[in-house]
Length: 97
Image (cartoon, rainbow, N blue to C red; front, side, top):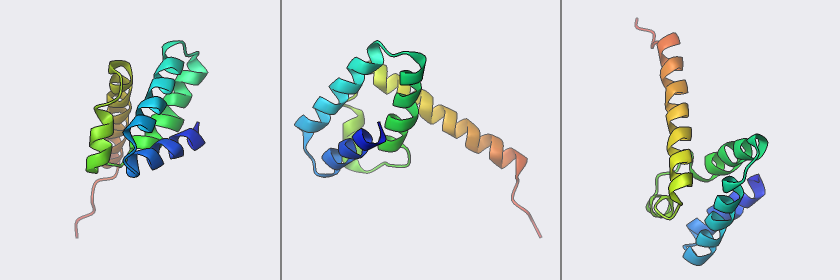
């Protein structure tokens, strides 16, 4: 899954929309009938590897090409990471002198 995510990143970065669309269609097909293990792999090994921490124009454009199901999954994944960061900051406030 991580290797496929890297291939998707290359297609996004090289601006090959047909290849990006094909990748997203394949992942969407897998996601539609996913077992819990496969669903987790799509969240963790695919969506995180493709989108987490990336906000360039090509990645923003690629997000818009995700199916509604994958967009929802990506939003859920990002919310999860935001909560982890919030929890960390609450437990580890900046030290003041």
